Length: 148
Image (cartoon, rainbow, N blue to C red; front, side, top):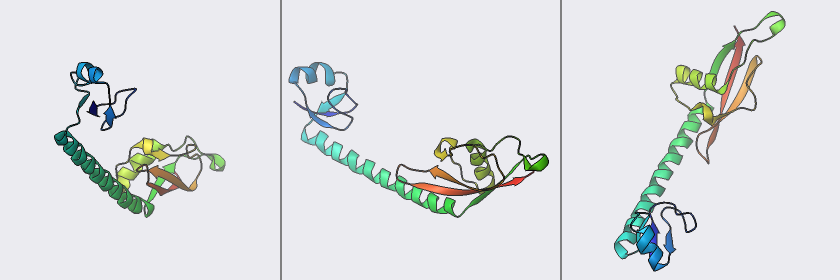
């Protein structure tokens, strides 16, 4: 029996897949637990519409991420860090602090987990930080650190 899966079913497939399953397994397990529906013409048409809608939403998200990336590339975030004698710094600047400064200075809300840094910034100067906005889109933000 051909079945369209509504949820991931471990050995058979993922949500939205059209799979061939034994009749008994489909009637006694998949269909009663609403893990899938029979692959008739109406359900196949619904599946096509859902996939088209998902592709449209994904394309819109990608376009939004590209636009935001262009905006972020042009921005510069200014931050300060405490310094002592000889220019030694106390503490460091983390991804969380950069995300807060970006929101405060430019009104762009980015999750700190999307900001990738090898290490926290512990020096004074200009730094580039990569922000992962989408699986296919990332932007480089310029961070200027001055002494307090």
